[in-house]
Amino acid sequence: MNANLPFASIYQVKLVQRQLAESWLQWGGPSLYQLAVSLLLGFFFGLHVVAA
Image (cartoon, rainbow, N blue to C red; front, side):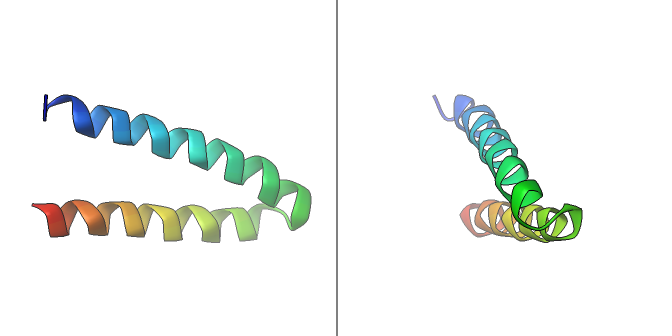
């Protein structure tokens, strides 16, 4: 069961990234989008480091 969790998390992150991409590209363009994605990835990997 634990082996499935990372895949589900990665899928969720990709969904969130796609939603962020649509929102940020409408609001402010690629620079804000890249900032949002980098923050999201940093938070996501930070959680995995803490969990490990």
